[in-house]
Length: 113
Image (cartoon, rainbow, N blue to C red; front, side):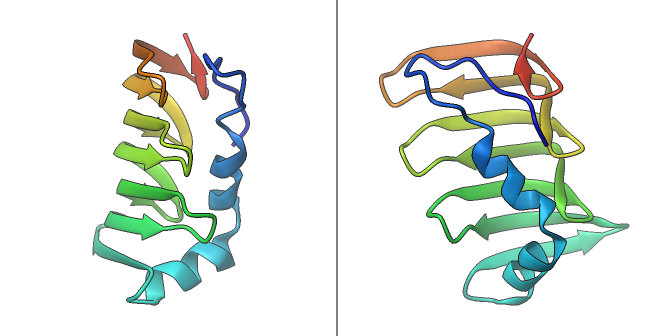
């Protein structure tokens, strides 16, 4: 789940995405009712995850990674809302930084395209 997103504040917005690579970690979050909620349909889960680092994801997952439509909120207030493929931002989406700067458009492999 690599792939940086250029940011107005110079911070790399991919570090938190690596959290999804730990299947055991996500499985424990999904099975703990206090940490998240999900509904499973044909391998997809749709719900909300509260990550230990204070960040959150809400949307669809396939297995244990974002797939389809979802929203990720970093602990500093940065928000990505859009399409995901194999755990990376891919397709149409928008990312907004706490400063108010907004990018809306295409993402490919986790990068602004």
